[in-house]
Image (cartoon, rainbow, N blue to C red; front, top):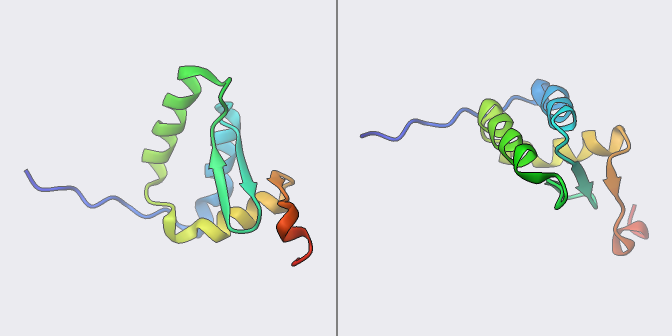
Length: 88
């Protein structure tokens, strides 16, 4: 059985990806200027399944990590790290 190549999310899909995560109660937040996290310890199994489904829909996001982080900052969904606050 051959592995299917996973699609790569496009830059233009970032707003929709983030909106779907938020609508599914999957907390998506930039942490500093170089990474983001998806999930909430209190969100429950339903939110985690939704996050997985949405992730599969949009495909590989790794090449767009910094663009996603930048978008999250632009909409106010970020945690500024103390060590970074003096750099930016």
